[in-house]
Image (cartoon, rainbow, N blue to C red; front, side, top):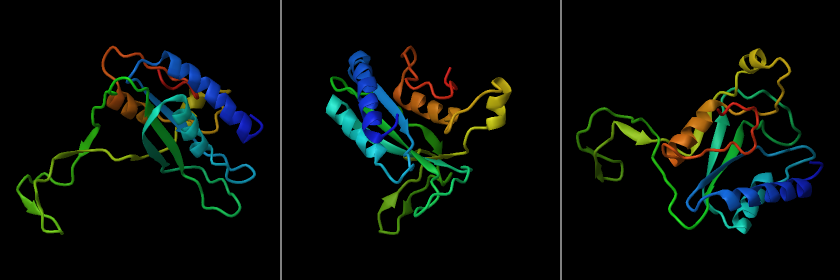
Length: 185
């Protein structure tokens, strides 16, 4: 697309079809990197607005922090190392959600006192947060599969795995609507 208006209109048309075929309670996960060509454009904000206008209910905006992002200098702003992941669902049924767990901060499950004086029992496991940190995709690996491979921001499989585990059940149909690098199989 040559400008934000064209991008938003294409995004709208693409997601109208997704809304049409998605079952009630079905979840849409959209990874959107902000563009800074010519300045900040608010792409993520516009994408959320479009999804709401189409009837989706926004569940969350997850932040994907890239721990080894390539440096791309931009005037007047900090180095960008994140992408937004908008999670939304089609109303009419409750979406499936299974917490994705990680190791907790303590293996000691004895009653403890918090800094505010409340008592709690620490868990050995806890749900991951809505800020996910991974490395960027291994370009050498992608080039070994396809020497002509090029994509500005390939997504790592870990991101797909987290959302599939959280929002789907065995037998569900999963669609990678943007295809991107084609890493989801």
